[in-house]
Length: 245
Image (cartoon, rainbow, N blue to C red; front, side, top):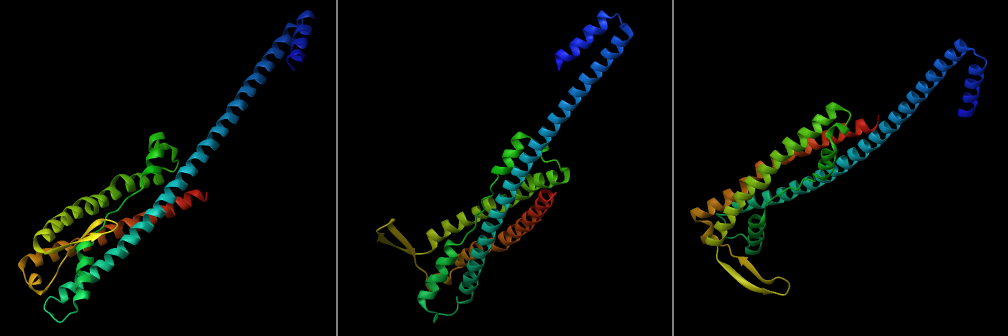
């Protein structure tokens, strides 16, 4: 193709047809410019496809992580519901000395060990954040994802993992001083410590503190985790809508 155009150029110059050569030269320049523009457009289209593919991949990873976090938090709420039943039962039977000791011990164990922590998977969000959140082309979606991870979930983590954990640490200290314990050999753990509960200890003022620390965190955890689940489900729907485009 280059040889063909070169021959035309040489022929026009040899025939001393300068005006025709000038028209030809301008036309050749235009063709070159058009070729460059087409190449740039193709390159831009390819880059846009690569960007979109990356965006779709990362959004799916965020979606998968949110769905797994939702499942884990819902499981946490189910565990809290069981602890709440035992808290209610333990509070109800304080004045009932005839209540079976084995059932009392069961509910006491559930209440004493009851707690909650949440673990949010930030990895997909941090991955796309490290490469630039502008990779998410939909600005509304980008803002909502950022707000979810940077504000909402971190707020939930503070109340559940930090505030409630401090309350449960206090409960642990109280258990160690309030209840008698038995130490037994255990083939797996080496020893097992069993804390004992009876009517006498249940009538002490410190037992009220134990019940407050054991049950007081439950409404807080339920409220914040339920809000987090609702917000994450809403985010999943927004991502699904974007991926369907």
